[in-house]
Length: 357
Ligand SMILES: [Zn+2]
Image (cartoon, rainbow, N blue to C red; front, side, top):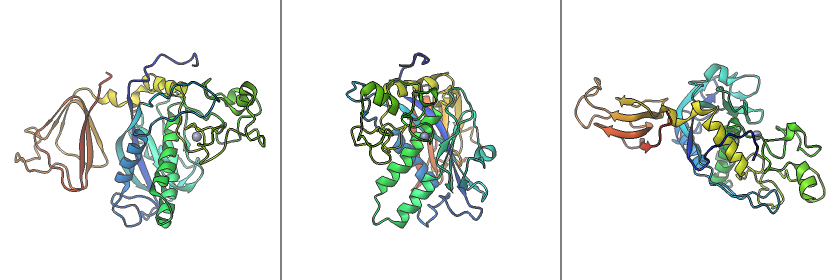
């Protein structure tokens, strides 16, 4: 393990808050909307956001392919993402995914506590804005969701939906892990592999994730002997035993080393702790209504409905969750429900977690 890491408990599950922003063209097309997938189906931006985070949060760690013959433990990831809110914006200028037109300058919301995710149209590769362990300005920008979903819609009979999820949601997970300080392990940024030397530019701060240079020199690795770029084997090759299947490379596989997990947990415990769910689970919170764009509600003790909700009649059948709403309540001590009706098609769930204040 790298000596810069501060002691942290990677067995303690940690939750990081994220916002998802859908950038549409100015006429409202090109992306998921509040009510549809952009292709006339009911599966909407809220639904795909919830589905994506559920996919990421339930993904198990995998056994690392490299270094060869290692005895590294496959620890559970124990890092989960909480959907704080979902936003929809219309901008022809910001719809294309571009480094130069920065959605974050225009649309970031609650950015010192919530990491921002921008789902945009075609453009440059998916990216994360920094890997700093102390920055309170964190966002990712992706074109994958729009492109892969439309590709799946257009080839539905031939394409597997799980492949759309695997490629899109896995990429989102990869970018979020950049925000939690991880670098690539076998390529430097999106450039060439790291085969030429063991430069600091190719050092991800983890001794248990060898670069191609280290594979050749420390492990006498010859790969397929055609290229020193191995073990960077590209998309879909994570099942080849000498190819990296690390989540931070480009195979699409999801393995993480003990050091990588320690890096992320340590950053969440320390410089990035403002983004944690547990910071919000303090104090009392009385909720009289649930409304978009907010998805998640927080408190130590949360009361839903009741006498102090002036706008709500006292009859128990008064709906305070409307038919299309998606809401989740997080509390560290208790949730008291005085009145609540979740209509058909709505989603409401209560979670208990720990406070870290
Ligand atoms: Zn990356």
